[in-house]
Every structure is written in C-alpha cells, then in structure tokens.
Length: 149
Image 1: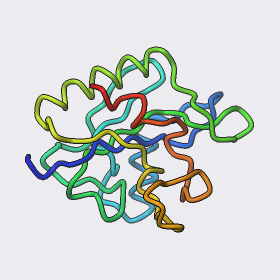
Image 2 (image 1 turned 180 degrees about the vertical axis):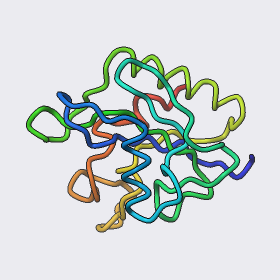
Image 3 (image 1 turned 30 degrees about the vertical axis):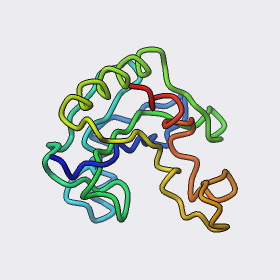
Image 4 (image 1 turned 135 degrees about the vertical axis):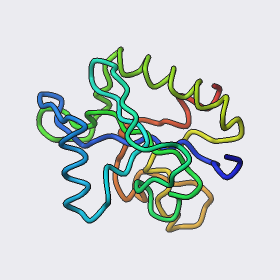
C-alpha cells in the first residue's frame, strides 16, 4: 500500500455524443493484449463509478508507473468532433472527487496527476508542457484541480 505514489487520471477518449461502457473498455483492452481493463476505476457520465481492478493489483494504464499508481478513467475526453476536451459531467466531477477522497485515506501520500503529466520532459526544464504531451489525456489539469484534496 505504501508503494502507491500516484493517482493517475485518464479519459477514455470517447466523443461526448457517444457512450463507452466498461464492457467495451474491457474488450478493447483485451484486444490490445491486456488480461482485462487496465484501470482500477471507471467513471461513467452519470457518475457511476465501477471498480475494474483491485487496488492491490498493478494496473495496465501508464507504462513505467503501473506498480506505483492507481488508474482512474472517466468516460469522455473528446468533444463531438473528436477533439480533446474536458467533457466531464457534474456527476463525473463529483464522483471523481469522492473517489479521490476515499483513496486518499488508504494512500495519503499519493499525488494526483493526469496521464499527460507522465510524458517525457524533452527539453528537461522540469515541466511537462503541452508540446511535450504524448497525448492530451485526461484533457484537463488533474494535478491543479485535485492537488489540495
């Protein structure tokens, strides 16, 4: 439990006018060679939070960080034209906040970050800037929004 250093927030890269269930997510991750969905939690647009992996098992969501992180994914992340956007509903925002507060009890030292924050710092200035992101996921600044929990 003390090895968890990060809560890594992801988006499913689903258009805002489409649905993407946890069953679809699991199927797609298995098709990529994972044994199951790679995230520990999945938050649907209506705020329902689904546990996909036990927190004591490593995820498959952030290469190089799976053993020291909990992966949390929200349904969405793209606007209707498939452009990266913060498409979280009020219900998702509430559910994510509640989940992070619950996880904070078990893992008090873990830092909240977005998947994009794990990108390589190409110019080595100590800051991951938008031009360095491997992807825009989760399409909002997770660290800024949740660092004070």
